Length: 130
Image: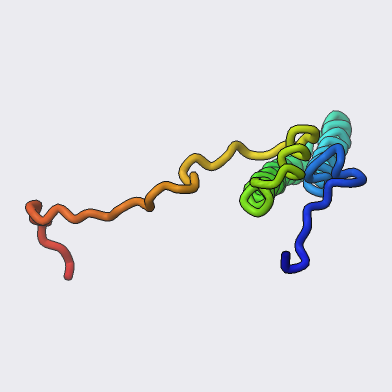
């Protein structure tokens, strides 16, 4: 419908989200090689500048991994909403790996009511600036 369809052939017959999984592997390898090079250089001569670069690289790797893990989880959720009631989707999920992803967000489960805001009118607030 609307030109959308579920791709289950090729690499998708093994791995549901090869692009995100591949990026995670590439970023991890890059971070590992950079850390290895920095460690080698630090053995020769200690440098706060190099140590700072290593710290920034580590924080950046954590950030990109968080983004990619969340993107995988969100795509998995959208595909389930779009195709979850089809046999093709169910068979595909049963026979493939999704790749790494963040756990499902328990606060956004479908079918639940949004949080309701209530006001306690019996409690008088202290004087404010207004």
